[in-house]
Length: 354
Image (cartoon, rainbow, N blue to C red; front, side, top):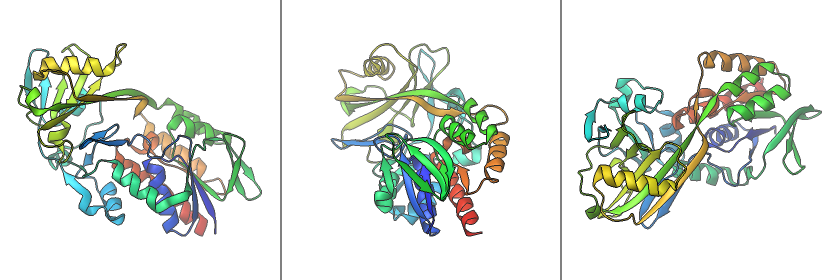
C-alpha cells in the first residue's frame, strides 16, 4: 500500500487525508504546530462558544456540508439566526446593503444569490468538523512535525522533518501556506512555484467579549456592524455572535466578537472601550479572549489562478505525484479549503492508480 504524506494539518490537509484514505492509500499528516486545524479554533467556556478563526460558511457552498454529513455531523449544522449588517459611521449605526460589509473589509465579494441564502455553522462551533476528522484519522495525524526539506529517494519522496527525522513516501500533498508550499515545490525543481510567495497574508486580531444582556443598552439588530473607513477607532467590525448563531451564549448573556486593526495597547481593553461607546455597554465584560493571527487571510494578486495552474502543471510532470491544496492557492473560505483538499487527494490517488 502506497503511503502519501499530507504536509499541513489545517482543514484542507485533513480533508485531503481522509479522501486519500478512502481511495485506499496509507496516509500520514505532518503538522508543524502543536495542534491540527489551522485557523479553526473553537473554545467552549461557561456556556459560551468562542471562535478564534472563521465562525461559519455560506449556506450556498456545498463542500464543507457534504463532508460534514459524511462524518455524521449533518444534524449539527445550524442556520444563521439574524440577518442584516449595520454601518458604524463614527456617529451612529445605519443600515448597510447586503454584501457591502465584505467589500468594506476587503474580502472577496460573493454573488448576491449566494449571500441571499445566508450562512451556516455547527452547533458546537467550527471545531466540530476538525474534531470529527481527527477522530477518524487518529494517529495518522502527527503534530510538531514541520517539514524542512523534500527530495527524491529510492522509494519516492524523502521528507526531512524538524528535529532530524524523515519520512519516505510515495506521494505528497502540500497543504501549507503559500510561502511554505513555494519553498518546498521549488526545492524539487518547480521554479514557477516561487511565484506563490507573492500571496500576501493579512494580519488579523479578534476579541471575543462576554456580557450580561442587561449591560448593553443599545438594540443589537442584525448580525453586527462594519465601521466606515473614516469612522475612526481600531474596531473595524463587530459580530453579535450570540445573535448570529444559536447556542453561542447562555441565557441572559451576550457574546460579541470585535475585529481590530493593529493596536499597540491591550486589544481586549481597546475593543471593550470602543464597543462600550458604540453599543452603550455598562460595566466591564465578564471576560475577554483575544486571538492574534500574524498571517491570517490570504490575499491574491492579479493572475493568481493562472499562476497556480502553471505550478500544478509542472508538478504533474513529477513522479511520484505531488500536488497543492489549501487557502493559499484555491480560496480562503473553509468550504473552498475542503474542496481544494479533496480535489488534490483525488488527483494524487488517480496518478497512483494509473
